[in-house]
Length: 284
Image 1 (cartoon, rainbow, N blue to C red):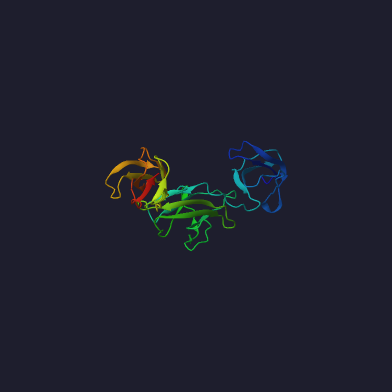
Image 2: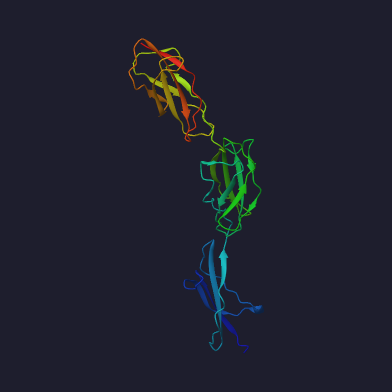
């Protein structure tokens, strides 16, 4: 009808338009075919809001409410969150030298599109000669983004980390470490500790001890001990399997006599290493 119009604006905190945040009635029609209203209530940053508007003519006839439109408040850029997880798990043992590292997606308060940067190194400080860095990886569809490393070295510990980038700011690193172990290897022979070769003990039930053996697979080790009456190792007196670094002989030995003993390490997979050197001791 060409009647002059006024407008009522409403701002809601939810898409269903049930939680009213601010409103204004009788806003006079503006010039140039557009009418504006500045929200009076201070809105929360990094938050979605929905608004709608309705016109009223000079005879108090109102039109339909407009379709609600969403807008997002973003007063300043915020860095992405720290990724909440990734794989392989912390301390995982890898059976491949070309693993796939994956990160659970970070979140961004500003709703920016994210990308990711991975690093892997043999140094926990990520400044070693083996440092490898990914290119910028666009966030993949789904809940995670992955990166395939170059070939790693077997029997080696690697440290890896990943962070998100929103185009302006980096988030904090998510970090982990893994051990590359493509095949099990038997441990090395332990070193005899006490009694040493040609040593003397003052008890008839001595405790035999070894120094820890080296295992390139970093397995937990146990030890087998054997005690003999002769240097040729033909007359076994007693033995034990699966002991710690020390074992007290479970028989009473003869005084003023020499005995011979050795030990070996066994890993968590049952692989036994070589026997230590055979050493003798004298009971006195």
